Length: 197
Image 1 (cartoon, helix red, strand yellow):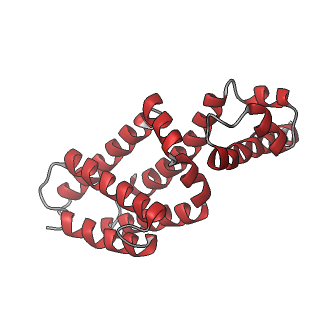
Image 2 (image 1 turned 60 degrees about the vertical axis):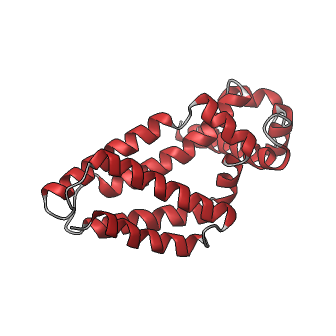
Image 3 (image 1 turned 135 degrees about the vertical axis):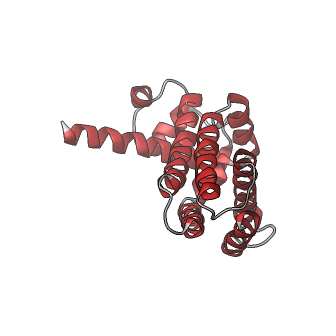
């Protein structure tokens, strides 16, 4: 049973990888389901064992990224440690590594056509809201324990999350305002300055 499940997961993953590659090369609308499964090495019917539609497949691609990023951030800040600034540095390091390792997938998600579909379908809203909630709790604990200055934890959770997201994304896609590594290191400094007493 485990072998069958592993094989199914490998098939699904191959279809996802082929889809991302073709979406990046041809665009979402111009890529057919037939092309995706052929590129993955399967018959067209295999697609429907794993996905209902091409939009469902795109949702799964996006969801996989959000699940990973949510997991990285949430696992690092779910327990308030002895050095919350080091915890935030670790989050930035892990996000950086994930972005470097999955640059191709992230670039696919950030093409104009796919980003528009993600926003239109509101595919990221629940993950972003959950992340902001976790960051808010972390900031509240930091204030209570005297590490962070008095501030609105939800507002700062949103602001810092958006700043980190936008700056790292821009650095990866356009090397603006600098390369990804430099931006990551500067964000560590900026976040500390925003939160420190």
